[in-house]
Image 1 (cartoon, helix red, strand yellow):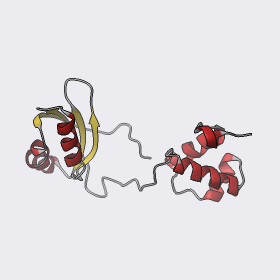
Image 2: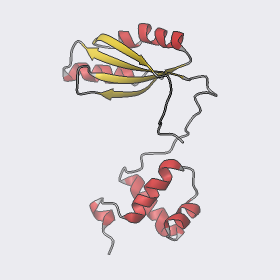
Image 3: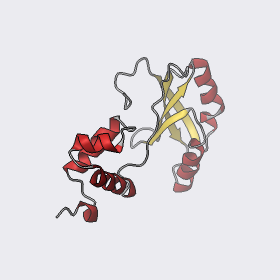
Amino acid sequence: MDNSSNTGSLDRFDRKIIDILSTEGRLSITELAKRIGLSTSPCQVRLKRLQDQGYIRGYRAILNPEKLRLEHVAFTEVKLADTTERALNAFNNAVLKIPEIEQCHMIAGAFDYLLKVRTTDIQAYRRILGETISNLPHVANTSTYVSMQSVKDAGP
């Protein structure tokens, strides 16, 4: 008996579903079932369970930054003046409101956060840095690293 639905562990079918959907999120349930070697109904039940248990959080479109004129990527190190829980929460909540910040990671190291910021060009980044990022709660200083090329990205 398969007890993966009780324990939260993943079997080979679950792992295949996750692997396939990580690169082809729009695949029909019929095609997904065929690829993993199950009929449609059991595949659909597994997919729903993976979603309900939080293994699959959602689906999204992977956008083309060139077409959208958002090719400029900079990584910004942020050092905070205050790292109390209250200060961290204030910073985190403020970052969530800035669309140009594509990713935000709390870092264990010489600085507190690493931001991935996507803009149209260096002038737009400079404005976001000076007017927005530098004015986030508790920011003491920043350092910027401009990406020259993305060698590997999560998208296709």
